[in-house]
Image (cartoon, rainbow, N blue to C red; front, side, top):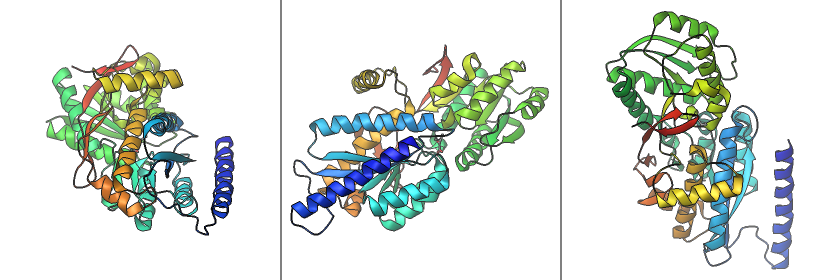
Length: 384
Ligand code: 1QQ
């Protein structure tokens, strides 16, 4: 509520200021002229989770974006204004946020939302309105099929999970596994199918498939069943909240086999919830903070200085996303033309970000490198 009120206040203040400036300048329209000459500002909307279960994902995203915004505004010709809205991880809230950004704030583009399920709800709205929308963490199948205005710099699970499974098999000699997934989360369902396929492709047997739901807190029935089947590993498709509790419960029950997760695992929050039970968890990511790369080191230092902690994958992808969008805006020659921004984004190639070399493929999905990580002493390190 507090955040929303503040945002609403800021938006109101912005609207009043914009109206005043329009009158003072003697022009009737509310649109800016939109060049990229010095001093022009592009308004970019953000839909992310700032309250409720997945707030740690959204907080990281917001911080990554704000750091990128401050850097861009300190040097670039085009200045960026972010209008940030809380989706609370709820489709209806995401829809309200998108409509406000598109129709009231007149943003040139949108970054977000955080969850694939929310993108399936608001992607079509943005697409129909001709507003470019770019997910930084939406990893399910089918995201960019929504339409030509939908982009993502999130690593799709279809690229991440097969690598995690393959590496886990090489390291641990997996022959038989159990799979668990949240069945009321669009992304987790999609990701479960990717897991199942990857497991089969590697000749691994699936002993059982167990479901749970987002916001569940008791996983003992599923884990009891899994324990009797004695799998070599357990694959989990879920957000940090539920995944963290699953890891914890499994260790309490004496289940010692490794876990392989998906994008939901890529938050330090997993380790906060599961504690020592997170040790050995495996996940693929385009990001890890100890990468030996100048750009990564600079980003990690700046992020630590501003927020007092290391950036996670969600912060890193959001940071890159704003640079990608700002770059595309600059090249489009306008700060307000949504179609020009879409066309400019489509041709992004050879962007060097903190998550590595980046380009959009012909389907507006990212082509990027993957690293398989493992939790060691509470940190995500490369699984070599
Ligand atoms: C998606 C995801 C989640 C893990 C984002 C928080 O990858 O919903 O696509």
